[in-house]
Every structure is written in structure tokens, then in C-alpha cells.
Image (cartoon, rainbow, N blue to C red; front, top):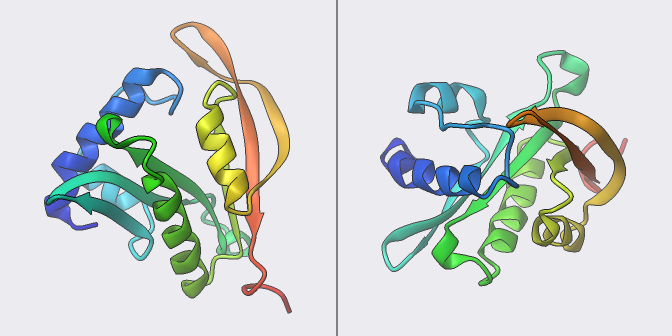
Length: 158
């Protein structure tokens, strides 16, 4: 993902926000804010017919050195490109690149209503480790999250 992809990435993110089942965020950030929050070596776009149709990125979960190899996953696919396994390809790429960059655990918090995302994560080696009941409010309604993680079999195995 390059800065010139940002407008398309932002549009896809905003489509996710509009579903009400992709994120607690209510609006998209500016490029500089998004760029600062995401791991530079682990961010990707999917391009089909010269158009960005999806993106994936990692966010570090903590600044503490003990958690240096743990990151949160974001995968978003454009509304007109869903159902084509683009999300799975992005997630697989993210997993491979995350391991090349020393990440041993990837995690994801997904709204339980977003069943396709949960299934995609499980098919790519994530396991449900728990449920976060009423973890945050969205439009004055408490929402739950399914908490998933994937532990690398090649990084941090010593």
C-alpha cells in the first residue's frame, strides 16, 4: 500500500463503517493518522482491473517490547468485490509478511454479526479465544466482539 492508494483505501474503509458491523469507528482518519497507526511493512492492497478492491494492514497492539510481535489485523473489501475470496488472499498475504517481519501472534476483534469475516479468519488459522461482552458502544448500543488469534508456527517458537 502506497500513499497514492489512500483515497481508494479510505473509500473502502468508509463502506465498512457504513455496514455497522466492521468497526467501532464512525469516520475515516486522515492519511497521516492512519499511516502513523499501522505497521509500515504489513499493509497491502488488492487491485483488480487497475482498481483497489481491498486492503489489509496490521496495527501494533502495544508499545511494550514484550508485545512487539503481536498485532491486530484489519481486512476490508470493497462492496462490489465481496464474495471473490479477495479478503482471504489479503489475509494470507498479511500472515506471510507478518511472519517475515517477526510477528508471532495476530489477533482480531470481529462483531459476531460479521459471520463471513469470522469464517474467513478461522479458515486462515485463527481460532476463537473468547467473546468480549459489551466491549464498546456504537450509536448508544453496547456491542460484543468475537476475539480471534493466530499463533505463528514459525516465529517465536524457541
